[in-house]
Length: 161
Image 1 (tube, one colour):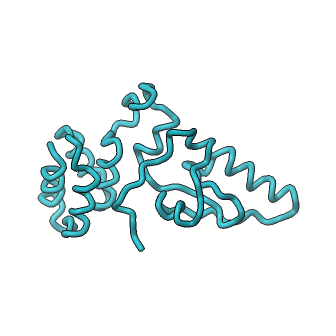
Image 2: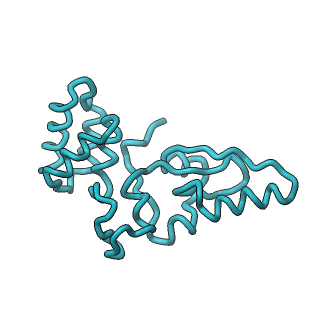
């Protein structure tokens, strides 16, 4: 199934939340070079909570199965690639750190917060958002969460002013 067919399938299954011209254009831009299995599109349509979520599930690697071998390392359940397949939502602090993280449990994130506490300070709040929002805030991918070459996919759907 090509991206245009996937978009039509979403609209037929979710008439209450169809892709509009702008969102359809962004979806097609991000997925135009992809071919999806019927099961991928049906699965994404069933579990997506919104058309944006559907888009995220099909863009990037187009992989809905977190236990499928990743394309980079051919490892099933690859820890370096897993977050990038599932979500483009990342975490960062509002403090001095210049990194965004895949998980709240990241040792780099926790270590920074603990260091501030040890020095008698109050750790900066942790916020979440898209990769694009983190990058526009001056943050770069954490080298613990995203070793070089494994930065998350930047999805044009999330480029909002």
